[in-house]
Length: 283
Image (cartoon, rainbow, N blue to C red; front, side, top):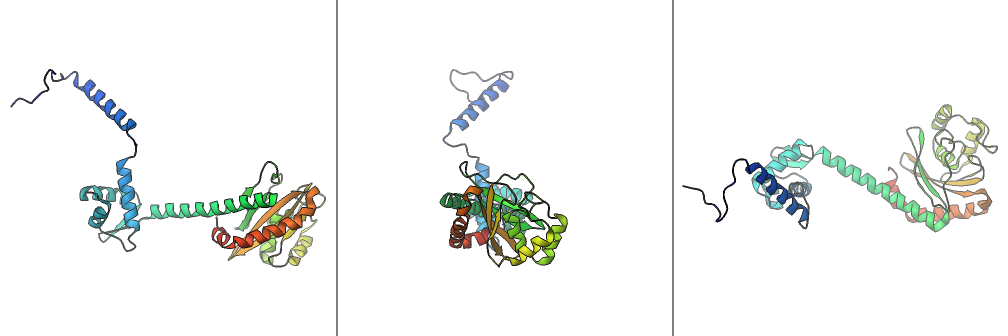
């Protein structure tokens, strides 16, 4: 039987067929690009399967997942095998569970959300109080400034000397060291001994340790031009579990009379958001 052909149109010759297929492919691409969406269906189906698996704490079989997502069973099997191979799912006794790759994504997303909470809080305090706001922690023997929020009108202190090595000279470092036990303080100072940063910097380890001993629990630490000439700072301790952390502010020295009131205002603001900060302290 002769294949049916369109009236008035001759079948393509072998030489014409590659060009014809190329033209058809280009038209298909254009239709895809001008379509109202350019979503990739296989990705959408895979994501629906992941969401369905996430809804079953004790796992679910392929047939149930296919039914819940409206997928044909062969399609569901193919996508599930691919997701297992890539580590986004794992299979155990015929049931599918979220895999390690998905859990890593979830952990990263939660971390980003916690960091966002801190960033937003710092920006709020910066605007309300009108000062640069810093967030820092002490981890594995190191001072880490995790986030700084400032504006062109109220710029942060320039880190002209390494913050990690000069913890004895700035309010952030002194506040963090004050939260450590004596052994941890001495260990830090053995690695980063006291050195003169400005004429106002504490002169030796012994004097610094005595000063840290006098800092009351959860009391703010004040520093006047010890790290940077022309700048005064205050740091408020935040201790949650084993993590030593601090929120700090800075002002030009000619505004030193604002430092105490700004610190009290920050303490009040922290109290209102302490729950969120407690969750976000580990960013």
